[in-house]
Image (cartoon, rainbow, N blue to C red):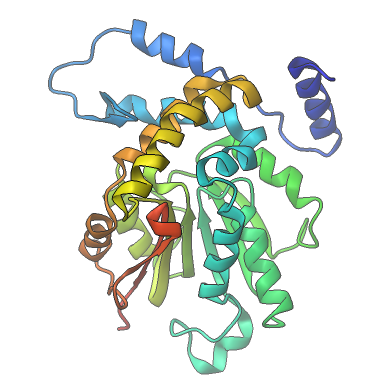
Length: 314
């Protein structure tokens, strides 16, 4: 069996040969220790949560970055553990519900042939983007729809670029990658995006409301905001079992599988701190979106939920 260090060396060598940036594999535990040893923040500095801990807003971004740099190469394993293995079915359902490549209310009828312009936020590994392009191509026979994958973390983007080599979209104008903060995207013009997606990412944002406002800005009138995120289980007994699994088993398995207990501990805590379905629906509405129907769809008893909002037509 290969050791962890040898396995990383092989991945790095392969990445260099393919022209992909080498991941940094920063140590989350080291970052956590460095933060604990740093100077105490000014009492006037705004705090936010990092899992169950309160941290300065100015430091959360780098701490979350260290987590995802640590888990980038085992991202699918992470989601398998978090969702008890069914995140792949959820993602397929999410994409089908959006039906990329079909006619859009954000587009004049005589322009429908130009395809969709999709922005996939926190989508570094390409999981959702590849599915959307496959759906547009194979189901709606649309060869024009394009996806921009945006992620704040360069290691996650590097993983997505490596995976994209195995797809028909590699090195085409239908797929692009940008490193950006979803809370402030000046490089994305107003009213330019047909569909904005964020899957299992928004709970890690420092200012979720700012990200929602920015999503509203970049979407075209009639454009759709769609988010899938771990959420609140709607059955008390099931919730007890799920939380026991989350807080006891997942960090332990993270240690055994990825050699990284701390990152997985943060991730289960971040799920617990995320707003309820009703609270998050209110945040989407506050950003200016119309809420279709109930506004959210629970998956597997609320382990995850799909939220949607529509930017009003002019």
